[in-house]
Image (tube, rainbow, N blue to C red; front, side, top):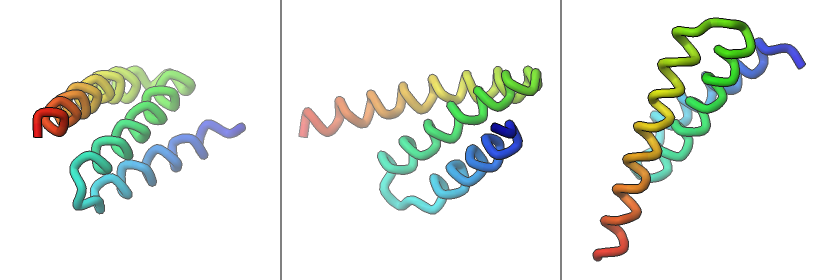
Length: 74
């Protein structure tokens, strides 16, 4: 597999995430894009890409958990 394709997939997922009006869907697509970019960055030894997206992965997880807790209290 060419790592370049993983980079394109990650970019597409992030773009799609920004078209979502539902915040939960936005976070899920963004999470998938961040995970893909983390793997891509690590594969090509682009550590700023891998580290930034790895951290953003945790930001998305935090917000998804927060949204889940809010939905359970409603």
